Figure 1 (cartoon, rainbow, N blue to C red):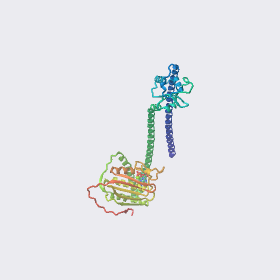
Figure 2: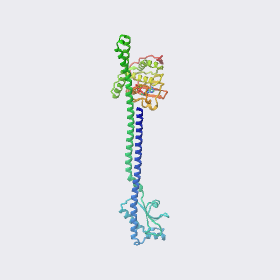
Figure 3: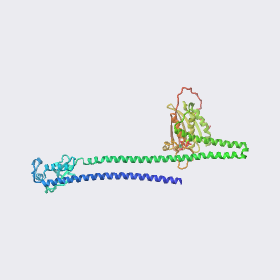
Figure 4: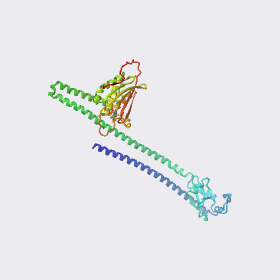
Length: 449
Ligand SMILES: Nc1ncnc2c1ncn2[C@@H]1O[C@H](COP(=O)(O)OP(=O)(O)OP(=O)(O)O)[C@@H](O)[C@H]1O
Ligand SMILES: [Mg+2]
């Protein structure tokens, strides 16, 4: 039921993401469409204005034709009879000044090149086209001059160099602004999605944690309640042997409970950041050895083995011994928990760059590279679908990392799925003036014997 609900929710979220993305793309497309449309409209408007101007120029030429005979100097050297004929009908000097007037009147202040040309033969007869001759022939601002000169299809055209540029520069700030707004929207959207997913993951982890804790606490509590009930039974009370046994169960279970509560409470202290390290000089090998001693029973019960190779030559450290032992216990606990049936665990110490390195090897289930990035986070447990057959709070490695870093050290994990994992802690070796007590230990010792 819960699973089904979850899947439904996931689908809704995916749908929402897709819908929003599609709308965003839609808005962008509409935006582009309107920009294009706006440019086209502006172009058309300008084109109309120019056409009207040109028409009025031609009209005024028509009204004033025949008044002034053409000055042959305007046509230069290559003046044939036909050209002279055209030029006397369409006086270029007049045309130029008329155009200047009309364009001025229409408030068209841009630079322009103009010319009288024959579109069929692509020949420019007069005007000042300058270097824009080919552009002028292709211009879309032109009017027919058939009312002035009938014998040939002549056109009067203008070309505005940088016409597109002007349009673009007018639209560019708006385009920039809308791109900026879009970028803001997209990043805000992704941020929301991202933090939502993160939040969701966190809440899932918390639910997991609470479920786990409830379960972990329930077992000892019910055991204690059963055992104490037995103690209250007068029949049981008569036998000292049985009384002792039940008292022992209560004591052990209570210890376990205390241990678990401590573990959770410790994290609260870690989070506050104000924890105190009671540092002192001690021998790390001895501390590790004592952890292994109390752990070997667990491993032997499971049919595995535990091996210790103390290879470090500098193994006296200045640290909080209690926390150090907790760290080792946490790593050993994980190595055993995530090893399946027969844990094969090896602990090796080394010196590297003035640091004491403690490596805990196992040949267990391993951790995928993706999950390796997260395992040191609070409450994080490698997802195993909906069943967690191995109990835990996801606090162990968070604690390990926090404490090791508080000692100016660092942690490291190397792991391959189904092959096994190695956790390394690196702690600085304090080169103290204290004399080092040589402790003679065998090269390698198998604790489980
Ligand atoms: N040696 C290991 N081999 C494989 N996976 C491991 C190993 N150590 C840790 N993990 C993975 O990393 C996760 C986080 O480990 P961590 O010790 O922080 O939490 P936990 O063991 O689940 O709970 P606890 O708080 O009781 O230690 C584990 O849930 C497990 O999935
Ligand atoms: Mg653990």
